[in-house]
Every structure is written in C-alpha cells, then in structure tokens.
Amino acid sequence: MLSPSITNSYSGNFQGAVDLGLAMHLLAGSLIGLIMSVPFMIFRSSTASAAGKAGAFIQKYAPIYGIAFGVGLWIAVFVPITYIIVVPYLNSFETRDVYIGQQVPTGQLSSTTFFQLLSMLDRLVFGAIAFNIFYGLLTVIVIKSSFEKYLVYRRQTRRTEFSA
Image (tube, rainbow, N blue to C red; front, side, top):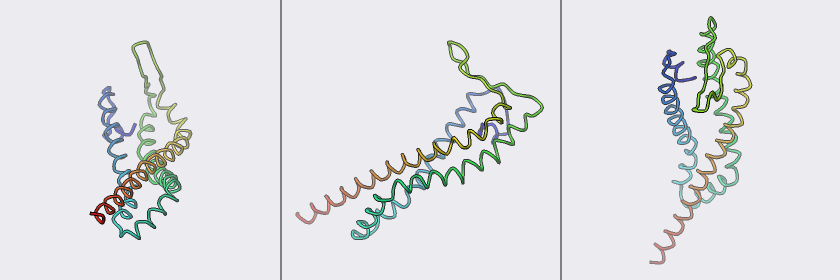
C-alpha cells in the first residue's frame, strides 16, 4: 500500500508495486538495524575496562532495549506512515471501491476492497506492535550475539599477543 501511495499512482502493475515495496522494506530494515546497533558499536570501540562494563550492561539490558526500540519504532515510524500516507491514499478511492485479489494457480487465495482495508485499519495498526516488538527483540539478539563474539575474539587475540 505504501509504494503506490508514494508514487501517487494506482495501476494494474501489481508486480512493480510489490517489488518497490519489498525494496523499500529491505532498505528501511537495514537502516533501522544499523541505527539500532550504534550503542553496541560505541561500546565495542571503548577501552578494555570500559568495554567490560559496557558489555555487562548490554548483556543485562539488551532485551529491554529491543522491546523499547520496537515500541519506539512503531510509534515513530509505523503509526505516522499509516495515518499520514496510507489512510489518505485509501480515502482517495472513496468514490469507487477498488477490489484487491490474490490469485494462485488453484484459484483465488484472498480478496478485499479498499473500504474493507479502512474498516480493519485499527486492528492492523495495533496488531503491528507485536511484530515490531518481535523484530526489535530478534535484532537485538543478533546484535548482542555478534557483540559477545567480538569481545571473546578480542580477549583471545590479546592473550595470544601477550603470550607471544
């Protein structure tokens, strides 16, 4: 829904809209993951004693950081995009109810109309918070495990340097 509303066009080229939407989703996810990992990168480049304290702090509060980041992302990005971009786009079709269907070789998989999308928008918005929390936790788990492996690798290389 976001890609046709940004390009301000509705056409039968659903594949182009899906491709653009997927590309925007991957780009946004990459940028958000990079932003989310900044505190971990800052602690990584600290001195050894500070890195140990920072590492302990990150290990202790990483799940809370992931949940808070997911909720913050939902509030700061998902809700404004939904209500500022997508809802006006769906409302622009108020004179006609455009049918959206998904076909598979065995028949129709699902179908809806823009009016039906508008009627279930609140459920979609509040249902998305669970996904944002899940993605925040998943991202912080990956970042945390990478950070821990870096600290272990850094300690091992220092031991081999001192013993040599």
